[in-house]
Length: 205
Image (cartoon, rainbow, N blue to C red; front, side, top):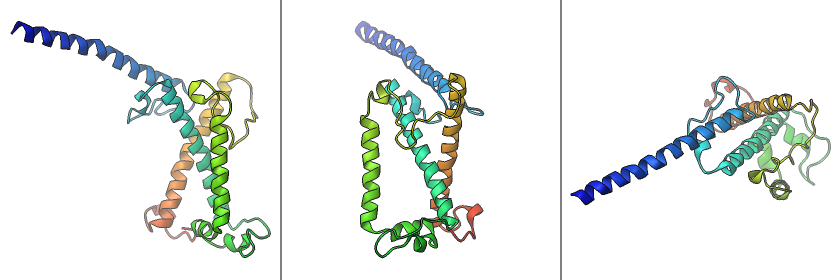
């Protein structure tokens, strides 16, 4: 009986020893979120799934890099979708038998289907190449290096003031988050009629 009691006490002690470390890790992660660009009102540390507490600081940096990449791609995709929907296009031919003008009268997703396979392969390769270059250049962002900037060159049109730069970065992330919602809505409306009430009846969806 004494051995059982001693074992229970020992296990309780181990549990108590680990509990503060877990709480501290969670608090540290939430504190890091609050200090990062993009932590804006009304929810400065919005993380309902607790993703910031997974892994290490490097994991959090990987999540931020992924969000930044997806934000920038979503902004490009949303802009491209709207430009395509407006009928704007490059002059000339995309291939020997497909003109840019012929693609401009199609819905954006139909236009993508009309792109020749060789053209799609070139686009996929460009994306792959950009990803490899951005991940291999210099010190990796999970080890303290800069985030990838191959999509948009690192041109600073603003002030060198750290606080103003953080505000600009937060604006970019928030615009990117909205763009991710926008392009997902566009794709949903194009594939599932009536799924996005605000786009019902729009000829481009």
